[in-house]
Image 1 (spheres, rainbow, N blue to C red):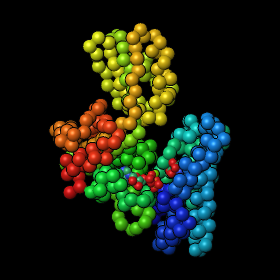
Image 2: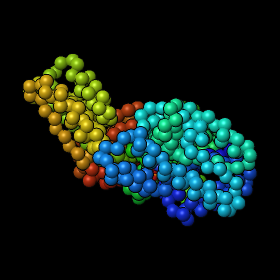
Image 3: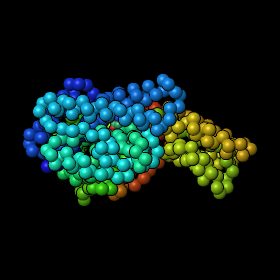
Image 4: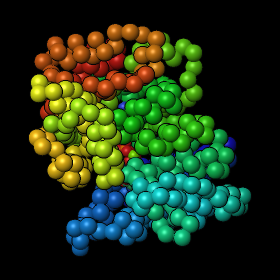
Length: 403
Ligand code: ADP
Ligand code: ASP
Ligand code: MG
């Protein structure tokens, strides 16, 4: 078997953890498997490196940030390879560039354009383990680029596809994908399996166990993968193509996303073109808009509300300024300290009443709902951030997910 295993930050978070990862890799090698290990930086390291850049500048260049933060993964590959050597396992570390990862796009959030696996195949062919740095690659100019926070998941999935692995295992600090974050909802249950589509939707609304772009890549290229623990040998969660009986489960899981903000633009003339102008300005300032609600106030003027990450609030306000200067009685209202709660499940396609159950559970818990948005397999609402944990628990219980 050819196996790609990815170990996240906590899993390589100390020298003892690195040694136990080496033992786990040795067990596979002893079994006769060919192994590519993808590692993240030791937990806390990426944040520490970003903090170092901020010590010397308020606005470090993204190109140089990538040069700096990519060193976190470089420490991990060398340390794990040294640990493997010390227990007699032949292994070679490779940076993103040596692994053949070609990236494109903006620094700090580049995408993978192509992978040339020839050097990795050569190492595997000589009977050695490949230890590859996650989260990084180089663009056509040879500049180091990183793949966005949590991007080692994407590295692992893409490398698994490039070396034609039989399985890609994402090893982390929980036993798999749960019906909710097990650190928030105590009776959350581990799923045996989940469809790509459901995990993608969960990941894109805050379930950080997998980076959403990595799930998108896996779905697109049919890369089979599982999420399991790096701390034990229990079976994890298998991520698979949708099966006919899967719609029988109405809700697969609930997800929370904190640190959200709402911006409302008021006093907009009720005429065509304004929504486009506002969204264009926000888009050009790289503000990621999530939910959108528009309505008409008593004065006959339109109001547009958007949610976004609180981190984007300043940029959004700056982007809206020139638009407001064109409006006689326009204004901007902002509200931080909100969070998003989402229910996801492909069963929603064939079951009705899901929103009613969710809203009723929140109402019974006296939690006020702000904005609402839905897609074919998801319902999201905003609530006050300090109610989000209780909200997740009552909605999880209302769908019987802990049973
Ligand atoms: P790694 O460092 O291995 O990449 P992450 O911290 O990125 O690990 O992701 C694992 C964490 O994701 C868990 O510790 C858990 O708290 C969180 N998480 C959030 N939602 C879920 C969920 N539905 N199932 C499992 N873990 C979840
Ligand atoms: N080290 C990077 C991060 O902290 C990538 C990863 O862990 O997947 O975001
Ligand atoms: Mg992660």
